[in-house]
Length: 203
Image 1 (tube, rainbow, N blue to C red):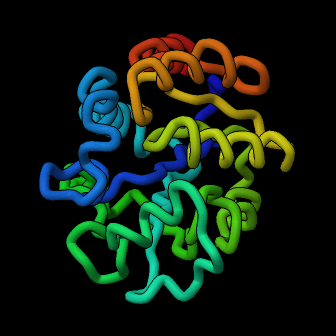
Image 2: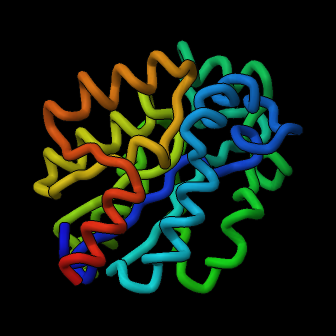
């Protein structure tokens, strides 16, 4: 992915309910997020490369007050509904303030209601409209939203890279397992510093 003019950075889950100490689901990813430095490294990546990407998109997850869009939810989606996370208009659903300096660059793609950032959103059409052939993923949760979005991207014909230190999971073990054993089966995996150095060397 030497040519960032055909590459999109897709941000997933950078919301207060995950990354603010006051967030409802903060404890779910806190340890893994602290170890990987997901927020700090993503901000560093944006500082270095944001203006050079074909597109930088944020795909927040939002639900109505009564979660009526979830029909018989199970597992993580049931937990989200039970604890009242990511309600539209709430503090927890807001994008983290660390991304505010990049508001003029980041485009928000609404509509995410589940695990996959492509489902019920215009993400695929927006990427194609901008001539994107490569996708880089950053955010949380690695084993759920990152994985499901990455697999769909591959099936849609995109080349996919996942930044191991710009993502986080429910546990450090889960994060390591996905980055070392699962993602390499269908995508490229590297740290953000390695990506930046490679891009600068070929730019």
